Amino acid sequence: MLWSWDDPFFKDLDGPIYHYTTASALKSIVEHDELWAMEASSESDKYEVAYGRELVEGWLGDQNERRSQVQEQYVRAALELVHSGVLPTRQDDVFVLSASLDDDDMTQWDRYASGGNGFMLGIDPKADLSAKRLKSSYDLPRAGAFQDGMVVSSGWNRVVYGDDQAKRLLNSLLEHVESEDGRIKPTGPLVLEKHPIFTHFVNALVVLMSLIKKWAFRNEHEVRYVVHVLDSGVYSETKCIGGSIRRHVALEGPIRSIVPEDHAPETRVTKHWRHLPISSVMMGPNCSSTMAGVHQLLEETFYPGDFDTCEEIGVSSARAAA
Image 1 (tube, one colour):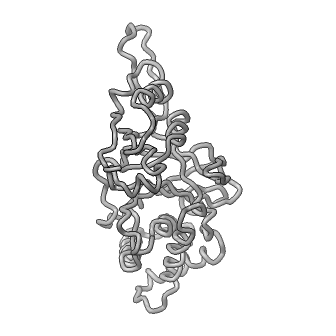
Image 2: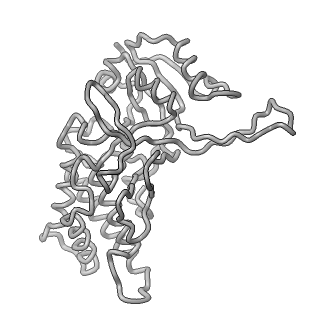
């Protein structure tokens, strides 16, 4: 997720994560083969992204933190970027796709899946997602690449709950930056803003701003895929959701290639397409959709042609009590 920084908190997520959604959203997801990171200003807790940003900014400017000369150099340069407006300072710059570690959870059904009349998608968090239909996209930008339209995406990560855990991670990051800095021998005058380690340090700060939430939310067990667009004029699409017009960044899955085996060898053509890493679909405890209807939707739209959807994506009903 955050370059070579290997803090134990960001260990790989094991097994699937779960995205709860409505029936209409499921249909749109499979028809377009994309998920949507929604602008954070539309989140139910309007303050949650601002909270992380303010905590990171406060940590950067905290004169009581004991830091080495190298650490202080990186911190001052990052704080200047924040104050100059180069880095995201508004919720409008942040797009979030949320999921949960909790499988078949009634709280999630009730809040995000039409009171149990929706669906839960099992997603492989190790499969890459990428921003779709944007001018430019970088997972970890090149040194000095803080240009208009840049996209910083995080991959899937656990949400950080509370000030103590957040500050521990920030200090861990800074220690790692200092360690990496000592491994590079400068070939000329150091321009920190163009230094690759500084670029990665700032990217990590940008992502952490959007992963930090208050301790009170710790029972949500949320994971997030975060996208920052560093130019307010570069957004892919808008949607009408719940009577509101909201912007979003469309995310597509990795490229998949298959050679159909039922064709003669001389006529076999390798098929390539981007495919969302969805491993299962669960119908909610109050779901009024039919199993046959869900199967047909997947077969008609998600895997066109030669492939049997339902052998690859398991469709089941919720076990949680209604």
